[in-house]
Each structure stands twice: as C-alpha cells, then as structure tokens.
Image 1 (tube, rainbow, N blue to C red):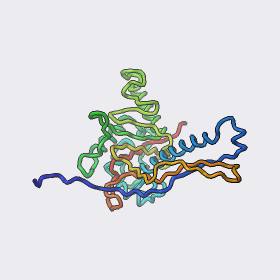
Image 2 (image 1 turned 90 degrees about the vertical axis):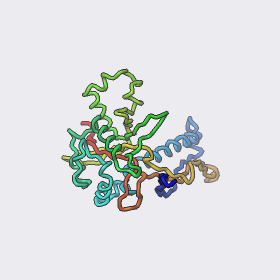
Image 3 (image 1 turned 90 degrees about the horizontal axis):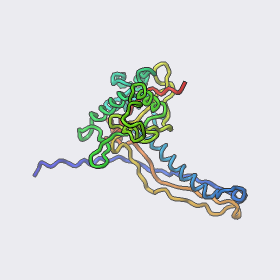
Image 4 (image 1 turned 30 degrees about the horizontal axis):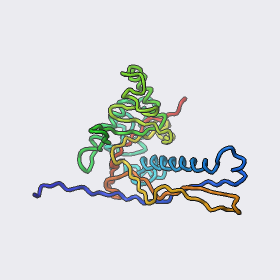
Length: 289
C-alpha cells in the first residue's frame, strides 16, 4: 500500500471541423459518356477524401505548437525549437542547431554533408530514444507482433532519393542478403528499412524553398513513434446525395466528415509544450539537376 505508481492521464484537445466535397453531372454528360459517370464520381470522391486525410496528416506533422508551419512566425519557431531541441535535428549533426534559432539552424544545412543517409537516420533514432518524455523512457516506438519495435520516418522524394543513393554508394543496396523485395532492407517500392526504422517516401511532403546554406531547399522529415498524431472524428465519412435539381437534369453526390488532425503534444497550450512522439529532421532537399 502507498507504493503504487500514478497513472498518467494527459489530454490533447482537438477541435473538429467540417471536411466535405461533391460532384455533379447532368443528363447529357451521363448519356454521352461510355462509363457510369455518377459511379465514377463516387470513386473520385473516395480518393479525394483519402487525399484530404493524407494532406491533413502532413500539415499536422509540421505544425509549430498547433500553428501551421507556413503561418508560424520566427518567434514561434524559435520558441518551439527551444522546447523541442532534443528532438529536432538539422542535417547530419546536433551541433547544427545554432542556439535554438530556427532560421539560423536551417542555414547550416548544406547539399554535401547534410543529405539524408543511414547515419542521419541512426542519429535521429538515438535522439528519439533519449528525448525527454513524461515517463522518462524516450519516445516510445510502435510495437507490432509479439515484441517487434519500429519507428517510421516520413520523408519527401528528394530525401528518399539521397538515402537510396547513399546506400548504393556504400554497397548496402547491391550487397544485400537477397536481391529482391524480400530483403529486410525493403518493405515495398517506396519504403526502406534502416537500423529498425521504416523510411517511407511521401512525395506530397513539400520542401522548404531556399532556406538552407547557399539558398538550397531543405526537406523536412518526420521520425514518428507511437501516438505521434491524434485524429478526432465527430462524424465518420458519409455519402451525401443532392436531390434532383433543374427539373431532374442535374444529379449530385458528395461526402462529408467532421474531424481534425493534430500532432500530439505534452503540455499542449503551455509555455513548454513538447511534441509527444515526433523527431523532426531537416536535411538537404535539392531537386534533380
């Protein structure tokens, strides 16, 4: 009695909003088309809803204390970096952090030494494992199967290209155990596994234009552990049907959701809010020559 551990009960507020879209066709389009355009509209809307969700996740991963990155001020970025310095990596070395000045730290990233590579992933993983957290155990990896653990890093295409080029240059690609997708280095056409970290290419993650050394583009990457993001649903995706309009000439179909996505934080809204399970890594993001 009296030696029990307190059960943490932290919360993160997510305010839902309406997400919706729709298509409309008329009788002439339906008659002229060789396909069922109304059904095609439903398929297109399903794909659109998935894209909205993906884009929302990308935006949430790069938020600065709840503020969309593109809208955050330099003061807000510096404050976020100060509180998250143990889980933000600029290029290939922790020393690239210039006194928690976000823009000055980005200027330390060059296109030679600071490309995404195996050592950069390894360093980011160690930073995640040793980051300050509420339970003192570092950022918790995702656990699957019996006891398998992994982190997942989402990266833009140019960063993924550089990682693959590093692997080829250092013989890791050609000298693998099995020269096929069954090799443990590969987990699909757009994923690489390195040091227990799944690196996933996400072409839609935008680069930061001209913010690095000599005006190079910088690619933000996100190493995620368990509970990195929260998605709150007040209403699951549902189909909405527009009643016949214009004397039955037009018919519409749409979808509607009530939800939002946010990067989970420890101490949300406070002066020292910390990203719960995301290690942000900025590397060179130069386009192909």
